[in-house]
Length: 131
Image (cartoon, rainbow, N blue to C red; front, side, top):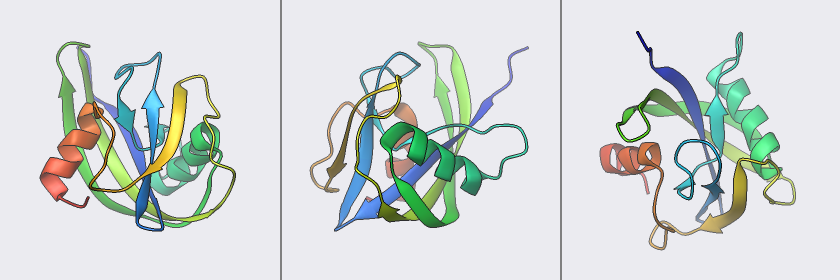
């Protein structure tokens, strides 16, 4: 029996814009999402957020806190994740696609988000209405 995975999405905001990345390779290819990824053994969601922000977007964060979660079922890819969302302050770093699973990274205003959105991000926006 397959069990859901646990992912972490990192909400980084600067000057009223959100940091988003275009995914390649893994599930959700060619969709836009917050930086993030799988929790590793022994990590807290906040530690995962800091690691993934650095690995994927070359960004340093601080004051990370859990702000919500989504239950994401992706039937086409036969994937099921519980995604924990962590909001954090941008500290610095030259934003760039820093990982082979990311093709583009950028800052986007809430009223001008790129598309298509990764299912977990779409679910988060619909459920939380944060953006």
